[in-house]
Image (cartoon, rainbow, N blue to C red; front, side, top):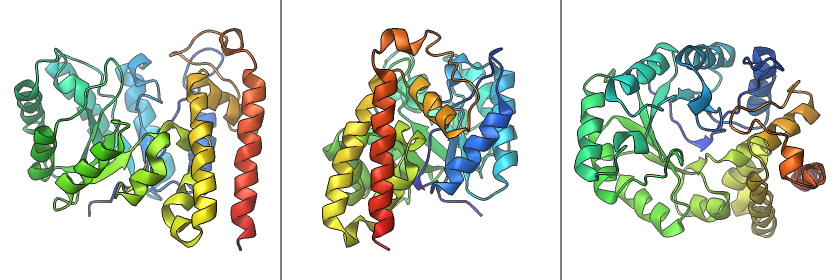
Length: 310
């Protein structure tokens, strides 16, 4: 039975040891934290996981570990789709398939690496679909690296009509685009998952079936409340949505290192190393510890407000 990929879907970060290998003990703690804080599914081996800096073996081991640790409690999808060469892409996606994930995720810019347009996108898509298991749900992800390649309406219709795609991670960061995409995919059952915090609540009200942005590494439970309970408490929902927008601005201050610092404070991580940002974030972002203090303080304040509702 195919599992729905919707709701609050954290984009998983990858903990590394001081020797720059994957820290699986910390990863296990992170997985339990996601699930205990309202995750409806997990997105492994994505950009937040630093997939562009993982070897094929590391991608394989990472995805398998997540699937094995989750034990079916929530669906797991995996990507690792970082090559431009079609045979390299197929190898990466087959690694994701072999992990046992409930779905695999294709990256839009690698379907059109030369920016040639729709014909190239659809041609490469069909080539891969012919070689991937027909019964495994797929996702499409407008990953910003190496460049943000938005899916056109025509391409989205092809994806939806194929019957192969369960969801789209929308990185348009544009509410009218989300609304249009929800309308295009309505009959297909394909979920549109907005990943932009600035429009998160409005996108939910417009039919986005959850949230799939980087802020799920700080307070997925707050997004879960906004998604599930905002209609009963509109004043608090508006206040919370404003906080979440402002909190998400911290992404510019060294993410994913900031998220790793956060989880080190929580006791989930032992180190904060990143292959994406190998420098000391304190040298690049002055006052980063104070920023993190306020982010934590605000998060806890809203958790209390929600708890006080009874």
